[in-house]
Image (tube, rainbow, N blue to C red):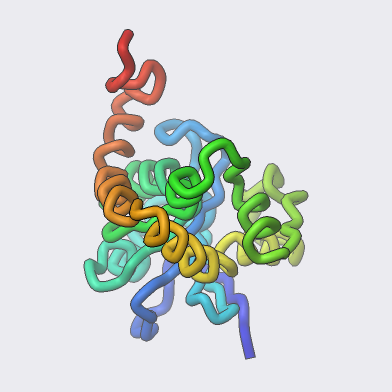
Length: 203
């Protein structure tokens, strides 16, 4: 039976993780340097989710070990933000990485690429995004927040499987993998203030 568990400060020890986990985060805003990391969500692709409430001055070694484990692929949607925020807040370089947003942009240029759009278009699932801007600093998360946070990591494995087929069909999988490998560098540039103007822009 699938479960959602909430933990304060860190994951438990000795969880046997699969070869791929889905990862997401909730923050107080979209500034990767200034805003606070409040929650990190982990999904196993089988309907189970582990939610870690991040506490100031708690090092969360078990979460860090998972995020940096080279044998476990971390699947994100819009990894650029999460990877940068995790680097700032937890001092980790997440690796290896897969980003469903980048993958979808490569296979469907011009489409809408939010997680909500991908779930609707590929999986015919409607995500409720009402809690997106709720207060994630609360000591006790509401049932609605817990369901919302878990929902953001429930479907990334299924989306990856579909997107991989499309990338292979369009002969863009190698290009996608190169983009994923660059994400830690892109995150570092964002942290240093090169988000806008982009370091790679003409101006």
